[in-house]
Image (cartoon, rainbow, N blue to C red; front, side, top):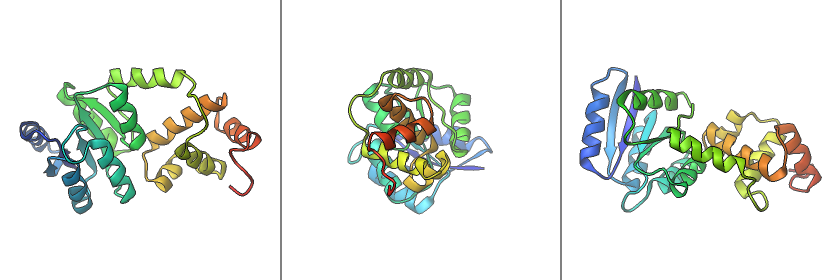
Length: 209
C-alpha cells in the first residue's frame, strides 16, 4: 500500500483526490495540506511515500515547499499535480526535486500509475510537460555551469551513480538526469565520461574536487 499526502489550496480538490485514492486498496491517504507550509509540517510528521503537490498556493508555493522538504531530508517522492504546464512552472518544479509532473485533467488511471511510478522513484510526466522539457534539452543552455550542476558533476566524477548522487543531494534521480543533460549541452558532449574529461580540461573540476 502506498501512503499519500495531498497538498492543494482548494478543499474541493483535496476532497475529490482523497475520495478517489481512499476507494482504491493500493493507496492510503495519511493527510492533507492547504498550502506549502502545512505541507512541509505534515510531510515531516507523516513521512508519506508520495506527496501530491499543487504549485500555486498561498503562504508557501509548491516549488519552495519541495526545496524545503529536500533541505530537511524528507525522502517522500513528490508528484506535482497542477493546472499549469508553462516553462516557468515546469522547470523550477523538476529542478527542485519533483519526481513527476501531471496536470489536473489527467485520467484517474493515469494518476494512479503516476503515483505508483513516483513511489518507485520513476519519473512520469504529462505529454505536454515532456515536450517542453525535451525542447529545453535540445537547446544548449547558455552560460557557465550552475552550482547544482557542478555538485552533480563532482559526484559523477567521483564515481557516483545517478541514484547515489540523488541521495547525496536530496533530490530525485530524475532531477540528477536533468542536470546532467544541461551539463552535456553546455560542455558540448554526449556522455558522462566526456563530460568529466571536458570539465577537467576547462577547469570546472580539479583533482582535489
